[in-house]
Image (cartoon, helix red, strand yellow):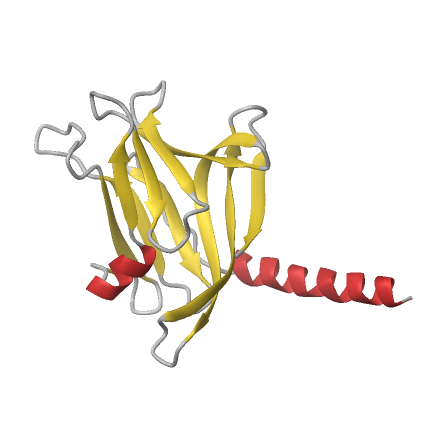
Length: 177
């Protein structure tokens, strides 16, 4: 009986989290966008996209840039603060000699090892292993405990989702931190 009650409570909690996330805005996908990050604190969204040079080629010294879409402030676009870059930023390391593929690791979530490489269509995609399947990463959601200023004190879990390269289906995994 206790097991069924606990399972029911966990199911309701999980449904509420999923329902809350479905009410979040979905940013418009562009050729440069790799993925986006949303948090439990508010609906403002961080976009991660490729950084191109004037000739439209990938900036191999700084291949990924990030910025806010402030959905709660007229959807304006702003830069991240120094502290926000430290919390949500990614260390970008080339993984081949030509600097055409990169490993991205979050400063605070080392479990996320994202590979950015050119797709067969000529644009760059972010890849992550989700549920033991190589997946084109689309979205990261962070459930955090925040201080009164909205800065995360601790991350409870992250949820990653995208499209499996193996079967073309939506693939989502929650990682407890």
